[in-house]
Image (cartoon, rainbow, N blue to C red):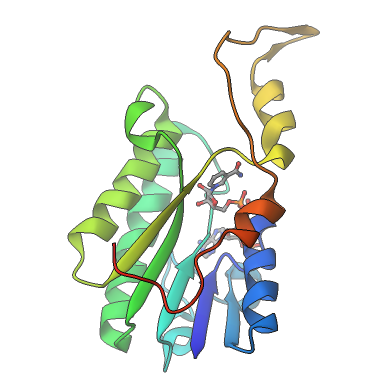
Length: 177
Ligand SMILES: NC(=O)c1ccc[n+]([C@@H]2O[C@H](COP(=O)([O-])OP(=O)(O)OC[C@H]3O[C@@H](n4cnc5c(N)ncnc54)[C@H](OP(=O)(O)O)[C@@H]3O)[C@@H](O)[C@H]2O)c1
């Protein structure tokens, strides 16, 4: 089965690519560094030709509110349209636990916009929601830093190491959700 992993060079993407290759699927790791850009459409139709499944684990280079919203909306629209044209049979995307309950955050508004585009499409799909990766905890802490002062909310969090996300990744063929 041909599977295209959008964001296949990223933290979780590289692990998903390896797992799928170990499962003897034909896997294309697609991202700007390999000439595939979901914002501009560059290289997209060629990468998707003959693909049955697309896994979207791309992320926005900027987490600024408007930039991240533009990223997930534009990327989502371009990708789903290209998948439809290519006859892709299943779309899988990685999202975040609690996305629909954290809408004071621009990042989560953007992730919800991505989920809504997927749910509105007629391509069978699976949205996998994970908690924050352990590898991301430093970034979260840094974003709350004010000089040498670190203020953290009393909220509990339950991060997951990305290896465990990849191990729990749904096995092909994916069920329709
Ligand atoms: N990090 C977390 O804690 C966490 C938790 C749950 C869910 N998620 C979700 O998991 C996904 C991946 O996160 P990550 O932390 O693994 O990301 P990451 O390491 O930052 O990797 C981002 C990937 O997106 C690609 N990309 C950037 N711009 C692109 C474009 N215009 N077209 C196509 N690909 C593009 C990058 O390609 P290049 O390398 O070529 O630039 C890279 O492969 C995101 O959707 C995120 O919301 C993350």
